[in-house]
Length: 415
Image (spheres, rainbow, N blue to C red):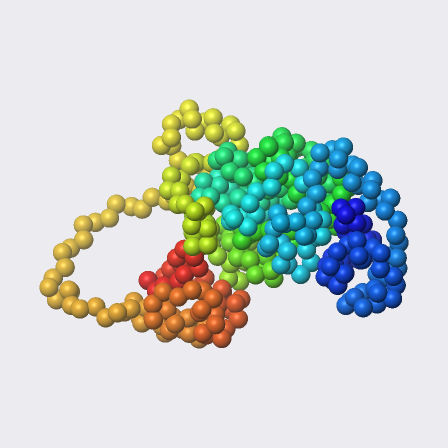
């Protein structure tokens, strides 16, 4: 019964991993509820304190939560439900019960992309977040965020303005709006997607809830995009959790002189994938979701501020944004025509061969693999014997050096 799912989910002091172990051992929360102390001893990783918690057979709290959900039109999704996201189910500590308002997307049939960043974002970061949210939605992705002020909220606004589906993951009850300044965004998210949380109705936004929330944000998603994050931030925690869960980590490059970009730029140095457009991200999943992912070429000038949009409308669409403008190159002089002696035969991969002396040993191993033709990233990892983290870091450097290019579906090739 649903009340037994809630009973197990709210066992105080018991970790999510142990709750998952209890469910796996007994097969159903109701069987765990009616089990005795002797049966609990056979659960792997269960402590004496955990067993005592399970011996509390009162259903009063669970029944109260169930009644609140009915009163507040909050739906419940359990680990065994068909709509429970498969990606989230596969993390080491999945929530047994999720509460939501709105309408669930097709978690397993669409590419979900988390967008995270600092609450104290710069104008550049806010504009980039809104543009990326807009473009991810236009390319067929579902934007996931923590609904916080700053990068999270602006990315969601961008996705909603493109008509996309969004998922807001909360560190409080589904009936609690936090921060209050995002009240309108909460309402729009509920209408065009869902507000999702593992916390029962009425739960306040305590600070220790947000690290737990972050594992759900990354666990739901195919990849996590970090737009702007300082050296110590929740966004970096989410990125680390995403890497641990085997998710892709994307980063919008930031100003090297701005403290709020220090953490996100460090992720690039560690091997995260550089992203300049929504298509840079969604192209990675085109082979997995061919019916949903589509290339969107029109850039769409997205500003973080309504007054900026009004100014652009008044000045006309051809005016450049003040933030992140494309630099103009000086006029080039005419190139002299090549002589016949310049048109000799060019050996295959000649540019790559010239760059080999400045490659590290790991980078050279990857280049050797790609000389055979296009390869999947996972195949490169398997054939080189390098760790996934080492390959990710080497691929970023090879891309920066102009040696390789990334293709849709995690394919790689030499330039």
